[in-house]
Image 1 (tube, each protein chain N blue to C red):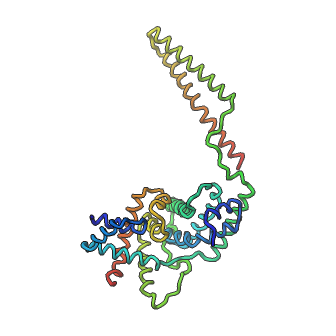
Image 2 (cartoon, rainbow over the protein chains, first blue to last red; image 1 turned 120 degrees about the vertical axis):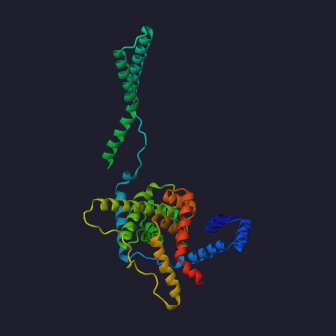
Length: 163
Length: 190
């Protein structure tokens, strides 16, 4: 058993029940290693010193003030129970909004497909075609992000009403 | 027999003040002591102490599946202390004249016991250990206090401080090595 392992086991001793063979291996190492013996002894002194640490206590006035403020806070929370409700992460969009977004998405995709088909047929890509493609792809991305943006602003709006 | 934490928490959520007071008195000493050793300053410790309990009142109703109240309580204190330090750094950045920072406070909160002749060596060790603790880097001091004084396990400290268990062990090891050096004279003298 190496010194580093023994140190680690001595530090963890209080935490977990160690198997008897581990404990006896540690004891056997300590019997032959003066450095680890010194470490173990110093650790014992340190752990023995911990109960002698000054134990600062909160003054009576601090305790009184803190309890008073906590009681006031509890009373306020009782008045507004809705303030501690957790808002759902995703609010469902109204059906008309969903239908409109789907229609717009379908229109944009069909236009893009039409432009691409026309380009492949004519084997000609000009600047105008590229600009049209760019415009419709941008449109599709905005439509994909729209539900997230709508939800985000809805949540903020609702929070402002609740609080 | 005093009721367990989970029972008191259920009653607090129903706005039972007595249950809150019971829980408060159960942990107020440990929290104040921890806050004091973190901040090394009586005023800051008092502020941290009060803010911790206010946070408990505010957020306890949301912790429906809280398994370890004590660990959660200490986590609040650690996080609030981090915020306190951040604000101090910002204030120091923008201040023209040197501001009052959290200097170690000799006239700490009330002493727990009067000095007795027979305990003079114990008191001396305690004073040396206290000074050595104050000299530890904050991260090591936190881990040492939580492990050796409060008795939290490694995985609990890992959750409280939001650091890996390996880091907890490493910090603890370094803290203990350092403190052992400070207390070496007591070991050598027996």
